[in-house]
Image 1 (tube, rainbow, N blue to C red):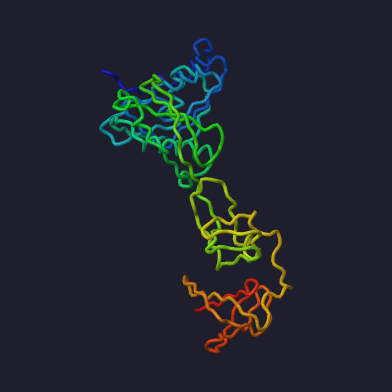
Image 2 (cartoon, rainbow, N blue to C red):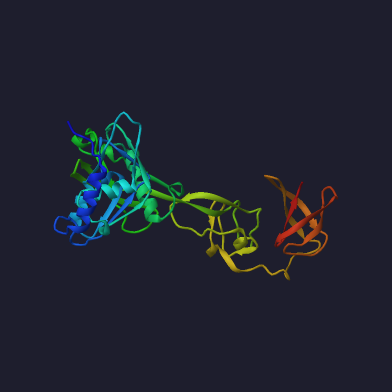
Length: 340
């Protein structure tokens, strides 16, 4: 019968004294600094909680790092839904194991909530979840800002003996460089302490970005305004210009932009339309867009009753009904009428 690890005050005092004065027995006598970053939560599939299950360990000595990762921190009481392991407890456990306090640097969460789950077969969902965690750290954004999905099934491609095996440990290595779109990651499958397989998997990676979307097709010299663009949060497979309204509204289109596409800085002329230019002349036919909340409609056969520059409000007449309306000049021969 295995006895769960516990520390008495006397043992702790002895361990600290031994760690402080005995360089002969210390496992870290080489002075290699050990960095340990605790996670806020951890899921384990065995009652034995090793340090590698709740923390990321780094050390310039790979043998020493492996030794630290394999230290048993605690045996879980499986009758409890979860247990807490604190930074202080981890420090004590390492000192009792023979490591020196000056060689240890424990950071991250003040305490880790550990939850036991019955061992299960590996699924593609687990792989995508861990890939999301790894990539969010690599890109340095919150997980909610990324979408990560396998481009093809991973588990079904495994040999039968691995696909049907319970309690496999999954480890996904960080990408070599930060990128979106198709990203290839190395996926490692472990059983206990043995590496069973390393295989590449391709993920579709998208980052949420705030972008300007063309409501309609935009031609050269058309000024950008709120009637022909809208701002949305979209998950994109490439990095695009995230433009604020004051960066884009009032600028003219350089070439052409198709409806539904992202408007980027390269699509715009570098200078604002000059207010000195007469864009609508008295007697001209004017293309008018009427806007009422979320509704937009075109009004035909409208005649300008006065000249107008960009942003001017001018009088116009409906040639069919003879009624006068007032609209805002938004481009050459173009105006907007807002209906309240």
